[in-house]
Amino acid sequence: MAGPRAYLDYNASAPLLAAARTAMIAALDAANPSSVHAEGRAARRLIEHARRDVAALVNATAEHVVFTSGATEAASTLLTPDWQMGRGAIRMSRLYVCEADHPCILSGGRFPAARVTRIGVDADGIVRLDALASALGRHDKADGLPLVAIHAANNETGVIQPIDRIAEIVKPAGGILIVDAVQAAGRIPLDMSVGYADYLILSSHKIGGPKGVGAIIAASDLMMPGPLIAGGGQEKGHRGGTENLAAIAGFGAAAREALIGLKSIDAVGSRRDEIEAIVKTLVPDAEVFGTGATRLANTTFFAIAGIKAETAQIAFDLAGVALSAGSACSSGKVGPSHVLKAMGHSDSLGALRVSIGHATSAEDIELFRTALAGIASRRGGREESCLSAAE
Image (cartoon, rainbow, N blue to C red; front, side, top):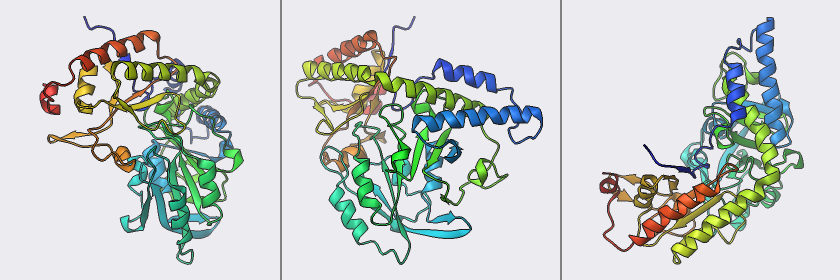
């Protein structure tokens, strides 16, 4: 019989909440929400109820929520040169992103690579505001407006970006600001009404909802990107295709729970601090990244000298602990994550990410402690490759 396991990988995907599962099951038999009969109208009400709940999580207007298949589709929709305001077209001539952004932002969406400018970060992963201001200052608006996309909180380090200060640079430059709030939602307060962002990107499964659904949330309906998926006019024409009703219902339920959970996020932070104390006790020379900045309460990202992150990840998994490695193992080549590279850690072997939630227990943390103690005791021996460790 398998032993106990601790799931400490919430930033990859949070466990499905009971409320979300219940909402999904209730919606499985619903009709097509575009149908005009009573059954269709009932299905439409489920979507609109979820839309209100998702909007409430970030204090936005429900009518400005567009459901997508996930955050990657939301990013690909927003990151485009072609926008509409009323019946007129608006062109974004260049996209500005952060070196530490998630790959779905770094890819540039529908912008050609030559039209994407990457802005560096400091040693803690905070975007260099002077570099952003300088880049926007050089932007030629005669060719089109600047579009800036940046994460609210980093998925690896948990470092929180100063979005309000970024907005103070972007708005006077005539730019549009897109905020990737995938990791921030439900972990820090978000408020669209204060006007710091023009668009937010959310993902359901990061807050305990189902996979395969996300959202674009706009500050207003005055300007929207050209649709990535055109079709039958669903989502007010911003995203064609029959809505994934069950997933949307689950997303709405998870958003309600996430809003409530914000009230007790400090308890999650205490658990995170306990984990970091264990790391420093068992591995005194371990490096925890991003500690000079404000971080999410649920995330810690650390490296153990002399042990490749992938090897340590496998050892944790065998000991019953699920967490993430910050670097990739491919064809025998081991390299640091792009986030660590952006922060100046070019020689790192990678790092381990522990990300937790409200359901993380004392037993989970004790299992982490036991696993790390075993790994630390074996440190200094022959470092195995990712492949041989897996075998």
